[in-house]
Length: 301
Ligand code: ATP
Ligand code: RIB
Image (cartoon, rainbow, N blue to C red):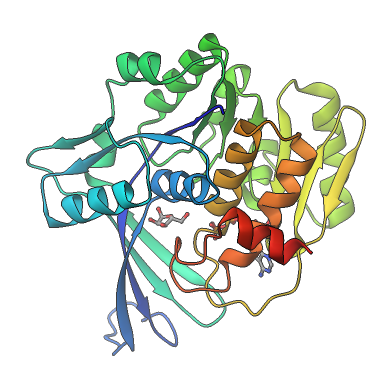
């Protein structure tokens, strides 16, 4: 079986549940706090590993308590952490997540993630033509670009999840086989806002005709739309009782990469990743609800 190589961030997520956000100058008493391993790189690696794909993670942590906790957690998830290095005198990335009833607000302190710079040797060592290479934008943008270029040169399938969005993504497209924005990130790629679903599908069709990179747009509770050579296909999401949508996109990307590594078609990989992402929003914490292959199969019946 091919493996998934993830280049990305690791954070400790501090999830605070509160009824509303404080106004500037105001102090609020919240309800609970929970600590979860998070960060887009770690989340996507865990999502891929849970469904049984071999996964190597290339990332950085700090020399602190959170660093050792996340490292142990990733090992328990059966992820190859040989290329997760520890940096001295800097903290492990932290995300303060305010979880409100319907949505969330997040502040990320990247810490060691922003020191993930010299990755050439490790990418060359870990990535082969058989593999799927998956990355996002919570680490230095130059590192993302270099990682994609090296993985493409090695012959791997390259996937870019352009989150959080940055316009330098446009320079990376020649090295990207599949790009997976959410709707807001797709608007960033287009450089304008979209008014309705019809317009989104029209823009996706135009994309399909003008770009080599395959486009998959995740659309929250609306599901997923993806381009084929001449068309746009939409798979609506199943209705579930939503507890926490943090990491839904990460779950989708990790499972998508794992399914492609397992030799599935893009259509089948998107379908299964959509089921997996929907399952993930039924539990609190980015990784808690990430399903196994058996759980996806059961849900899909
Ligand atoms: P996040 O930033 O919260 O990780 P995202 O904005 O990157 O997520 P979304 O498009 O919101 O990504 O969600 C990814 C996928 O998760 C969706 O395409 C869908 O399959 C599933 N999903 C998300 N929210 C819901 C929901 N409310 N009900 C069902 N499925 C959902
Ligand atoms: O995509 C969800 C992730 O974004 C969280 O786990 C948090 O760490 C932020 O990086």
